Image (cartoon, rainbow over all chains, first blue to last red):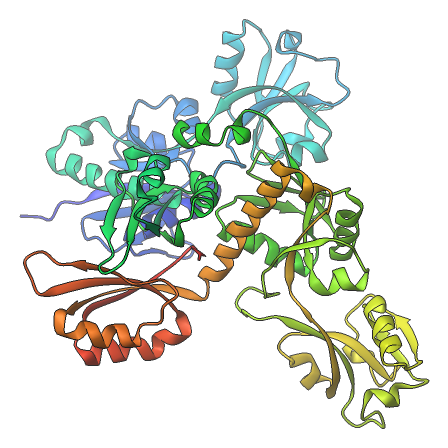
Length: 292
Length: 305
């Protein structure tokens, strides 16, 4: 029987680094071939393609791909009817959030969305913009922008809907944000028919578990520490019980070893607290996968 | 998620903040490295200048290392990352909360500030500096050093690294030295070491009297120091049988008392400990010789002892 394969799309550009990292941390060896759109993955059942994230939802809809990674924004923009398998939001995106915002020149008369009536809005995401304006009951002209959208107001457009990661570009062009239009997250997507095919479904499910595990592990750490048996009870009260700490008695001592996993951000608060409570030899370790 | 937050109400309920200085220039890399490996998310931009950190209780400012030392002294900042030598150089009266004992990631040792002169020079000892010109960024340190040694010499301030100028426009210099590479390249020798150089977390004296601020600063110090130490240590886990245990305990270094777990239904134990990376080179082959099995070494993120 011919060996079956699943075709997946991985995004180029700003999502590429994050996507490749989670594939690698999920245990795949991934190679990008220069100047080609083929992504070599060391799984004979996976055929990988490196594509623009804007195109991936469409290719999945047309079943040119069985599954792929892309942003929610591009699913919305293309209106592609696909299955959202799971969220792969970059765990470290606490500072950088992928947000589409409505912005105008710092000195513009436009103070709120309603002032856009009859004006021109430039954007790379025409459909998202139109849906947004419809929701706000504002009729304005939406024009497609091929890029460098932030330089367009006030001469070439009255307002823009543009992607913001850090806000630096907006500041540099003296733009002010009026509203958040769309907050986007990274998703694993699948074609509807592929999702109903038993072989492809199990392959997609496996991928989802591994990729999700890799994403979780980026924000999860393991913690080992020693605690005096007398303090064990009060220490265990501080550690969230849903983390089910493992307690091991250290032979021949009055000490126990505790192991638990915790969100990286929470660990920053918890570790100093545990140290103050008298826990010793606190060791935090990185995790490769966290399937919780 | 709320369980922990509620346990530390002061963190979530009030939006108290500490003002923290972060150095620009090459020290910025080392400071961001510390924060990132401690589990913070940071973002630094030089133009327009800003630094962000994903802790609502920390407000960050960028500045030159010596400015930070001064601003911490004055209380413009509650705390700051700067270097030990810069604090001395500008004679900033601050509390050194934690000395991280390194300047550059990957080289886990202190640097030094030293008086240097060309190898082929009539200057053999610091006494010979009398009446000479010394080029340096560290004018304060140099002035104090010369005064202590009762030597009068001319100090010439220069902003840039000056190794190449020594022996040309100046007779000697006071330089920062880490690997000694620049000394080799420019044929210089060390006459005397003035002080060590390393990254420190400094705090304002008044801020340190505020209970909340002090605790926050000490917590940051604990996390950064734990992250810093983790680069010198590894986790080690292996299986050993009952009769090997005595030998194992004899050779295991004891930063962390090993956690020994009995393997179910067998005469074997699992041993877990933390070991300095340098010692592993000898330790792992020795454990193997004793007969230990399934030896695994893994990286750590924080070591707080």
